[in-house]
Length: 167
Image (cartoon, rainbow, N blue to C red; front, side):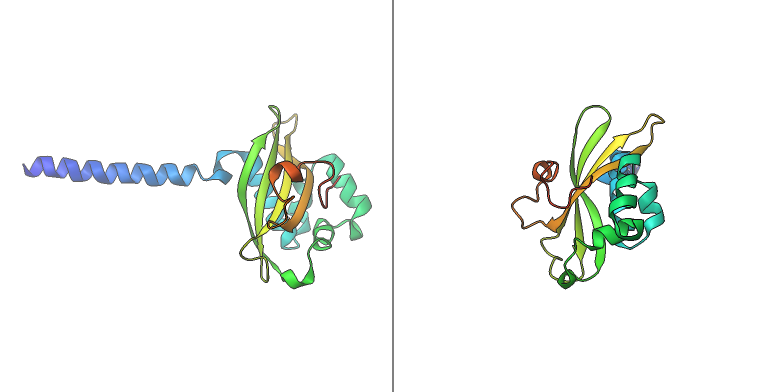
């Protein structure tokens, strides 16, 4: 009997370890490189770290930033969308995504700010497109609006008329 009990306990521990490993591997940012890119881009831009934020952009969006954003700064462009009463950027997480063909994803992220948007959050849309070399780049963004807004969903933010859309 003791050997059987050891096998049962060992099997239970093994199963628990497997569940933990699978959970860690299957967090949304870990299931697709486009998701991780979108989260990393928003975090860099939100924290004012333009170098990695610019590196995440596709050519057309990078040209837009150079032409339309103050001093060609991604973070300065995004900072213009954020009301002062929201306070500073805290974090961004993946919320959901949907494919748009085999080489593009429409991604919705949820960001939190220090004041007033900590509960409902700030909804951000990124379109990630796969490049010829297999890498992913952000081709478009919109949002940076309160998730309380009726137009803060993924389908609304993917539209040409979405708030703060670039390009």
